[in-house]
Image (cartoon, rainbow, N blue to C red; front, side, top):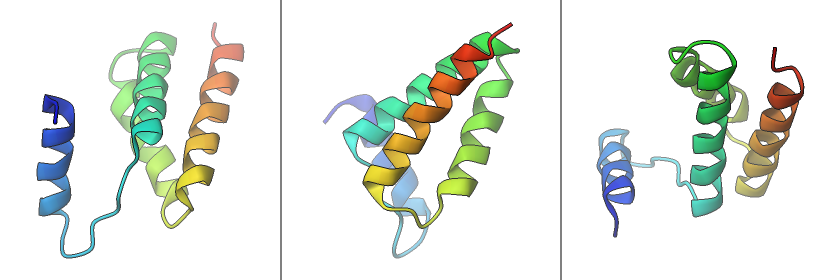
Length: 81
């Protein structure tokens, strides 16, 4: 298990008895969203953007979450100044 996955598992353990799971595709989609957000505005936009997306996606099916994140990345890239 790599360092990122180990850290994610430590975070999940701190989130309570039934923490949400996250697949490799979702991890990559979140990282891509953070990258685009950090380069679209200022770096501080990345954590806020990913947090907002997470709030919207709470309770959604894993495949829907990944597709939503991918679509949001495309929209942000199109709107890039």
